[in-house]
Image: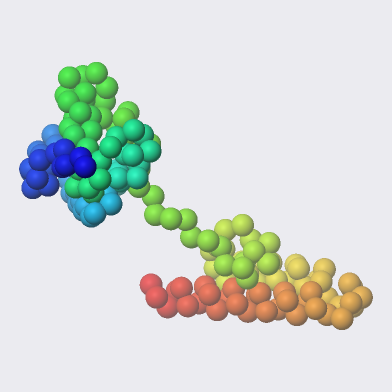
Length: 171
């Protein structure tokens, strides 16, 4: 059975602090566990995140079994990036541009999709305008049905209004 391939994690935590200083990171954070680790840092106001895991390493032919080893590989890779930037081979921004950390997208609630919105409207007035336009087309007198489409539109508009009003209350 293969043993641990890297030094203690404290060694790599110290290395990481030096790498972040070399990067000029204003703030940074990291964590590691049994299965992997991650490092995120902020440069010029932009948040970047790198993560690595035992599974990713093994999938690429690296035989490691400890999350601390994945963290060590991550720190060593960041150290290599710092070295490339310091030697003038590439600018750091060139390498890390694709690593921007974006929060997960907010899924548009169904009530807005039902009203034909592709993104959250700015205010309740936009919901009311859309409702009036759709109500004219979906009114039971126009569509000649049992009013199901119109009732669904009313429900969606009410839910959408409530959603925006509750969002405003949280601010």
